[in-house]
Image (cartoon, rainbow, N blue to C red; front, side, top):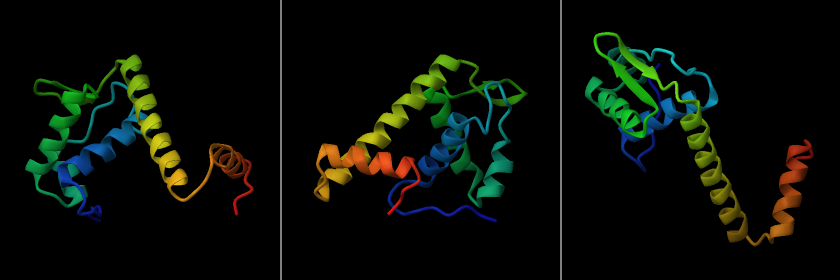
Length: 123
């Protein structure tokens, strides 16, 4: 079944983001071989060239490296993975806080809402 994409950003960027999240979550482990471009393109329902571009983006970020004739692998640099994971977390937190402030929440209220949510007291 093909993946779904939104129209707000290029498909290759969305593909790269999905693979990046699989890497950062540990679903794709450090040193693990990635599916081939063709395999993942078929799974996602995209052109292999689009998938190739996504993998190239991940290589530029240092999350993926290529072994000649052996395919692509997740980086084994655990410090880099931790740094990128914290960067992603920081971006998500900033977006959350900005959105909460935009709808009128004060800092103390944001902390209380988050605390309640984490305790399972969702409203």
